[in-house]
Amino acid sequence: MTLAEIAETLVGRGKGILAMDESIATCNKRLASVGLSGTEALRRAWRDLIVTTPNLGSCISGAILADETIRQTTLDGRPFVRALDEAGIIVGIKVDLGAKDMAGFPGEKITEGLDGLRDRLAEYAVLGARFAKWRAVITIGDGLPSRGCIEANAHALARYAALVQEAGLVPIVEPELLMTGSHTLEQCAAATEAVLSSVFEQLATGRVVLDGMILKPNMVLPGLDAAEQDPEDVVARATIACLLHVVPAEVAGIAFLSGGQSGELASARLAAINAIAAARYTRVPWPLTFSFARAIQWPALQIWAGRDANLARAQVALLKRANCNRAALVGDYDQAMELRSA
Ligand code: 13P
Image (cartoon, rainbow, N blue to C red; front, side, top):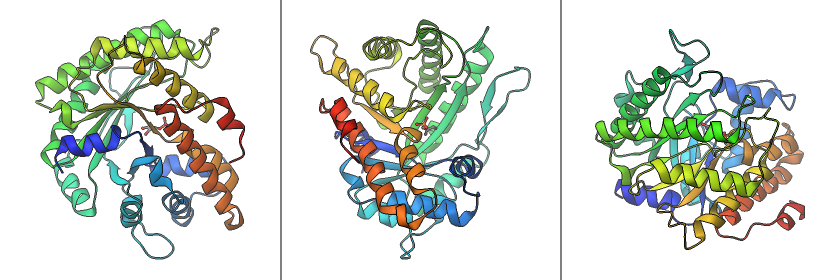
């Protein structure tokens, strides 16, 4: 398949992407939140539960794995990559090495992982990955984000994306503006627009082919501690307006991150965004889907909590969140879906 065909299959067919690419440290943190210790065996068991969820492929087009996960196998001995392939789910791989403190820019981060990336991509392609992800982390605050932080992260995203396309994989370009803080929706909109403008300038300079890449942005939201929490339709309008200002029409698609929103809120906002995009007057040129981690995984992790007896119920809960998000893409999502038992 060409890059454009892989990208279209990921974002353009009424399904979305499941991010299950938490680093070892982050996965251990998630396990600890339900009282489990961070061992390789438990991380494998949790990811096994996810990849063997019956019918997952009816809602999920692609799954993003981490370096440890792409090498693991299910209890019955199938590589995760094969289990996903048999479920009709395309395998992706997170290739950044994390966001580190940026020298000279207190309170800001720069994502590392470009050194040796060409060789790592060649190995991931052999292991079965067809797409990749790199996440930049941007903080909104007093005087933040700074120009220096925006440009350094945008440049790294473009270099990553060019290397990924050279390796024959589709890059997911993820500049995430964090929800933490008390900023307003308008401040988030201005900062997101500034970041995305810089990212697309660098992608153009870096000769990245836009119809062979996917943008993974934050929704335009007020900070978690903001006094005013805007309703879904305001969030949806602001998000689409921001994207229309700065994202070229050639981009294959847009897959939102959830960023720590609850599963229900993320689905409701995704549905509102797609409802506006479907209206004839908006002329949105890209498919708008999801690439959620926490907003899909969290209820299932709480139910499972490491116990085999809870496994089937946890898989039903995982599929429910995946299905709510699928429904949000096509106008089928409503509150009644949430009330039905998982
Ligand atoms: P969340 O949906 O939990 O924000 O994760 C998405 C992701 O892949 C972050 O890189």
